[in-house]
Amino acid sequence: MSFQGKAGFAVAAMGLAAASVLGAGAANAAGNQWASIAVSQSELIYGTSANEADAAAAEAIALADCHYADCEVITTWANGCGALIQSDDAFAWAVAANRAEAERLAYEKLSTVTPTAILANTGSANLSGTEIIDVICTANAR
Image (cartoon, rainbow, N blue to C red; front, top):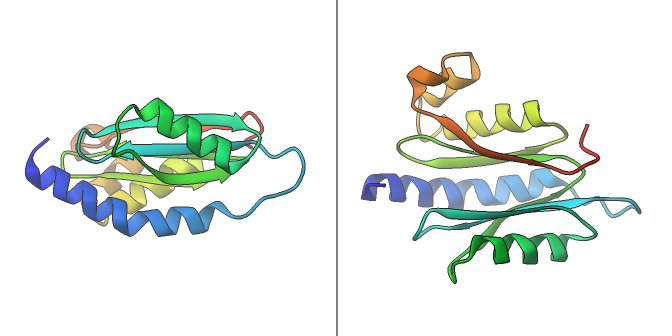
């Protein structure tokens, strides 16, 4: 990926990390299943976890799955789905109760860096230059 793409990723990562963590909620009731996504900005590699007993376990597994020393957790959530998407210029992610909503929110966030990303959410993904990298859902996602 070009420097511009990496710079876009860094901007998206910093700007969206707080929003995705805040949007994840603080579900602590018994029976919650936790998931997490970790990303290496230098290598543009990611790791995931799902269906873990608590947030700390989900984050540790995602970091281990990422395999690079500079991997950082970008989002952790309970009982739902997380979507990770990319364009030629940046990455974005979002968390929601189900896959469709997580994808929609991720496309919305990516569109703040890559304006054509919103086309992907309206059925024109091939024209937008965006693609879904991964969607991770806990077993009890709606």
